[in-house]
Amino acid sequence: MEYLGIPVVLVSSFVLGLTSLRRKLLPPAVSILLLATAPGRVFLTITQLPAMPSGSFSIFSVMILVLGASLATASHPPAGTVSR
Image 1: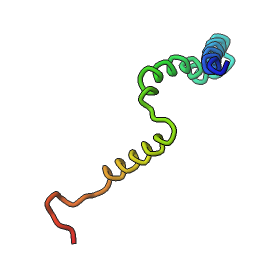
Image 2 (image 1 turned 90 degrees about the vertical axis):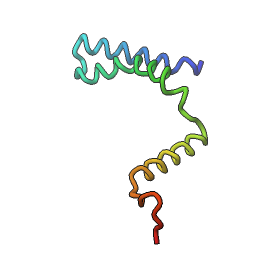
Image 3 (image 1 turned 60 degrees about the horizontal axis):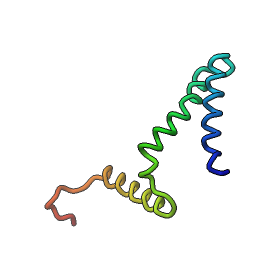
């Protein structure tokens, strides 16, 4: 029964967004965000989620991203020079 939770939330947010957009119950920006939830989830499932790490590997991935960002923004001496 747990596997039905996310699809129910996606379908209900889509229906709520569609209804609120037609009847002007919520601001248009909120209604559009509710409508975009289901297609956005499908897009992310196809493109990003299979490549996302899980568990303890996610901590390692975040550390590698931080290290890469710090190395990319740090100033380095030119290659071949010796720092003293």
